[in-house]
Length: 499
Image (cartoon, rainbow, N blue to C red; front, side):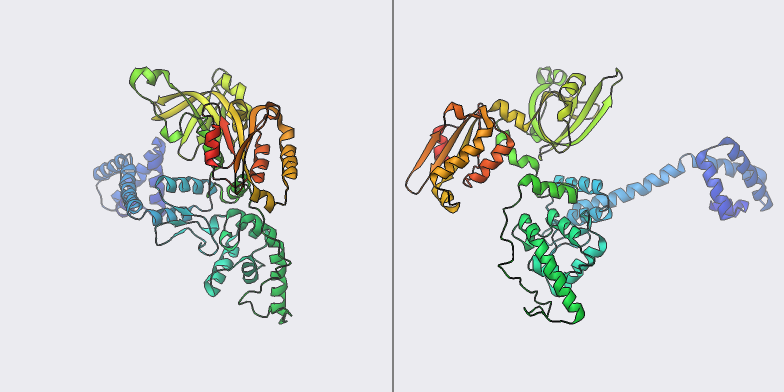
């Protein structure tokens, strides 16, 4: 552009048109520009042959100069960012996350990159987080409040400003009393609770959600009195310290949400599971079902296994499903499975697709069996699926026993005499009778421990709904409710020792 401007008298706008013509490489346009260049150059005292030679050089340079200059610039930027990522990984990832925090899909990908880099990502917290992603002194990434869906920038600025002004928030009532309720409404507060951003100021998320209506009502009353200059009979004349509510009016602590509800809230507000993974609940059972975790999968080159494939059974959370039609007109699907150790893409061709298509849904945990091989085109492992089961289907076909742990302290706490406890247990089991899972109860007291094995007529179908009821009814045993499998049966002696 500068050559055209100085030698041929082009204006800046005209020089830009010349640049575009060279970029598009249209012969007729280039011929037109060549005439304009030569005429302008001759007027400026440049010989016509020299002007033609210079234009030809410019046209030739346009074929590679743009790519060459940009590749050099990109190489420098790549080197700089790679250096920063290597020497200051937490700060680098916090900056990249902040740059794309409005794009949930990118945030999810970058959080996965943090995990691959072995970086700890702290959940968002109103007493620690800023609007952007930040880092702490120990090299951990602190989740930015601005990445929570349903929470606007004005609300976050109000929360952070008040925290910096008057110190950390003590509890939910203190929090609601100090924030600007015109900017932070109930919908925003519910999003903060479900994202885990208020975990530090409450016993658990279920309790926070139960106490929210009263907290908001008291805060609204307090702020209304402050705006009119009135004092409260109960000592709410000053917002510092925040007034404490009457404990008789405050809802008691609620039992924390089940993991699936808690994690679902995180997925809806953050776009990903941050404090856990849905597969964690089935960790102990999966050791009896799968042949390997995804991260441990491998294919040996010996014995011709590269060509034939290797039979494996794996489990994973479905994080992506893509369906398409083959050239023959049949349907197939590619499913991305994640078991928290790694991810793998599994392919269902026409027969498997028709048989198991109904099970292919995002956020479902599936057990898949198939042939593992090395895909030389993609440069990684691939799985051709022959069979798909849900976790419940796998339990029903493979589980052989349920072991429930109870003790006398549990019955006393719940004011359940033994007869009432038996009736309650009967009410849980009855709807699920007729399966192949025998039921056993390990009962403990201060002086003895016993194993009760129910008769076969009490064998049940191990549905998820029943297991959740039994978990709430049982003792908080370190092993939890044990589901036994034929491949690794839980011996009676082992059960007694674990109890």
